[in-house]
Length: 222
Ligand SMILES: [Zn+2]
Image (cartoon, rainbow, N blue to C red):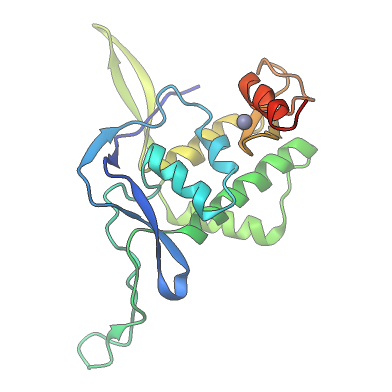
């Protein structure tokens, strides 16, 4: 597999969920310093962790660990405009919002789950509406590009330079699908995990890791 690199940043003060008017809620920075991070190095399973997100609070935990998904600096990109520039009709369509919309990211997580479920069932199809949405997202956003990186004195290797954290997640997903891997949903933490040949996990596994199996049975008195 081609390694994925991502030059990313995290707010040391963390993030919070904030109201975003008609858009619902968004995840915003708490306004600390941005420190460099690379959430993808040593973590091939970021896409599967992301796939498990179903609520704003779960998304917030993910962002607190890895940073925002689209724009690490968290600039407001929510402002859209109506009317024609220069004739007085030009005005903000709404109040805009800061940060990144919760509903957009939860929709992306749901789409990834649809892809994993389609792979699990052996059918290469997902609902047509989801297919359109997915194609739309991947058409609009550049997920990254392949680059040659030096290795040793005269060597080189290919790397995937992701353009954003969400881009890195799409690349990870693309690398893992189509190869006969199956996915399970952890009964303890809700994260998805790989199972089947080559993954070291049986296809009837119910937990993403042993410690979660132990924790689940402790919690349920088993
Ligand atoms: Zn788990």
